[in-house]
Image 1 (cartoon, rainbow, N blue to C red):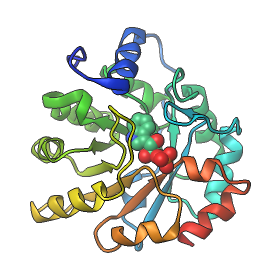
Image 2 (cartoon, rainbow, N blue to C red; image 1 turned 135 degrees about the vertical axis):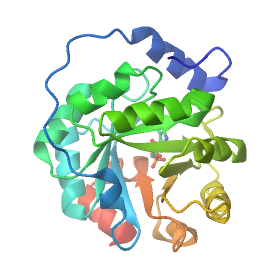
Image 3 (cartoon, protein in one colour; image 1 turned 180 degrees about the vertical axis):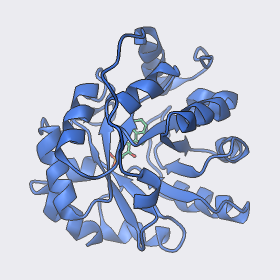
Image 4 (cartoon, protein in one colour; image 1 turned 45 degrees about the vertical axis):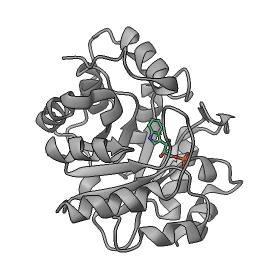
Length: 255
Ligand SMILES: O=P(O)(O)OC[C@@H](O)[C@@H](O)c1c[nH]c2ccccc12
């Protein structure tokens, strides 16, 4: 089952509709027998970092043409607990090939970062070595629960992404075990770092005891302070990718 994407506004709608047009099932490579647990990795003590491999983005344009394997190895040395690999090609310069190569190079669990709009994309994620997938509530709406179930059936963890109170409600109703709160509004691309703490508090007040991840816009250590004691993990991409030394940049943020 596919979500109705005609109503999704802004850049998010544009990217997702293009993605949906491209999904045509094909024979997949054999999936790795086992992959490390994404959820368990984030539940270690302290604020876990999910470090992201991202060559470009709609807000930044070209970020850095760094080899995903080299970037991931630096992230692993710097203490990242998981790695997010963009696989969207047109706006983020990613690919499933990147995901597979990173899987072969590091031991950390990997998140397939993409605009999942068809169940086949979950099978792809598994085949190319992901431990988890991103599910964006602004795209999947009422179908979020269906995609969560399908991800589970395939042995994948799901990070369910929200940006508003209404989306948070939908995520919790759908039974999300990991909720990502995006500081970036994917319709306008604006960042507001008060979004994650505000919605994170609401989630906890509503009794959510699962994994909470703060996403987007972090570049300085002080900015992580409002997350302490509330969030299990933070997802950081652009500011790390732009640093001359990724390992050092990661340590400076959370080491
Ligand atoms: O590069 P940043 O600002 O550190 O953000 C990372 C990550 O949160 C961001 O890439 C992201 C969050 N949700 C997404 C959904 C699709 C594509 C990308 C994203």
